[in-house]
Structure formats: structure tokens, C-alpha cells
Image: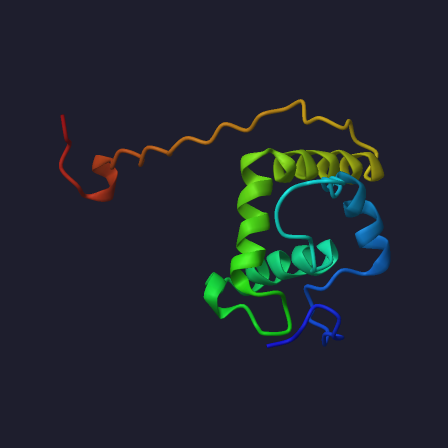
Length: 131
């Protein structure tokens, strides 16, 4: 198992520096004087591990050893999910992407999808009339 200070190899899901600069301000800061174990893994590596899991579609326990241990990654993911950090991050990134595309930050239209009823068969097709 790797230690926190060791260099990791790259994955396609790893963040570029510019991508990290966009995401980092939306993550909760480390609270000085907080009780509990001190943070030893960089948040960027935690985010990259979560992105790897999403992209690869693998189970938490199959996270490669290049990343922090899976219970650590899952702990951050669960905490951020429960406290709304991931939802706020998603909303902020969506707004930035829409603004970059020249659209309003919030979507204004809704698409409603409903099943299509099959057409009635007609006598001209050689089928008996129904109903």
C-alpha cells in the first residue's frame, strides 16, 4: 500500500490543474482545532479516487492501491453526500458549464416523456377489425 506522500501514476480520470482549481473552492476547508484524526491524504487525490470509481464503475474495495484506502475515500464521499457538498458542487459546475455555453445558469425548460401508444391495425392490412 502506498503512503500519503508517495507519487501516484496517472489515470484518465485524474484532474488537470485547471480542473482542480475549479473544484477546490467548493470543498469544505479543514477546520483548525477539529477533533479526530488529522487529514493525511490531499483532497485532490480523494476527488480523483471518486472520479476513478465513477468512470471505472468498480466497487469501492477494488480501488487501486495508487489511491487512498477505499474506506477513507468512501468516508469523504459519504460525508460530502450527507452534508450537501456534492450537490452544491454539482450545481456550481452545471451553472459554470451553462454560462460557458452562453445559456442561463438554471435550466428553464422541462422535457416530459411519455410512452407512445401503438397504432391500431387497419382492415386494409388484412387484419380483422378490433373493437
